Image (tube, rainbow, N blue to C red; front, side, top):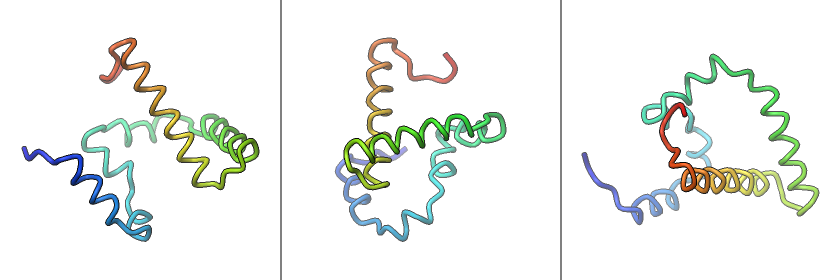
Length: 97
């Protein structure tokens, strides 16, 4: 298994064009490592979750004047930080607690 340096990942991200980013199906790309990203699509009714996320995006946009992408990135970052903090507190990180 090859070991990629964090700097190399950062450089690859910087070199990736917006056009290329739009072509990538990130669920599919990450599904090899996290199969749940494909499995949940057959099991979960995403509409209620999508509606709540949409409401949070709108709150960020109206409350802070963010554009769509910025609001999405902020919400994604908040979720990642919540997960990281939860992982520290509970030791969660694996599948199916």
